[in-house]
Length: 162
Image (cartoon, rainbow, N blue to C red; front, side, top):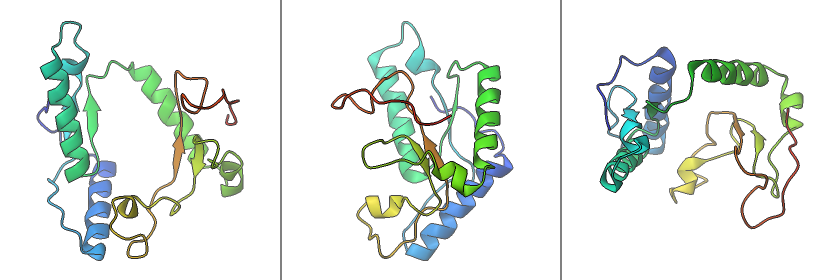
């Protein structure tokens, strides 16, 4: 459930500011709070948790994504050491030269890997006009944990990234 928001980090503040600036340019309305919403997964993950608890957490997550575009998840159960290693690996990857990152790019038949800045346009995916809005100001690396295939309808895929 929603917990009292901690003061936003500089990265969170930058994300909210960037989203506000982009929506101002595109003319879309946004009523984002000053901080990125913080949502606890404890009720969702509780061994004796109810379906109502899980639905409530899912509804909060949905609202945060629709209204702000970002969410900070707490009480997820991921050990801090794992989080630190993931941040270190992500930081090292995104500092690589573009050519190296592009060598493990997503493709039409493989939905995991690197996607360069400006190649995704979420505003357009909401039927708000691809021509009216620029590509998103982000790089990303999509991963899948726990599955040997890109999706349930295709043959297993080989890992292509480090």
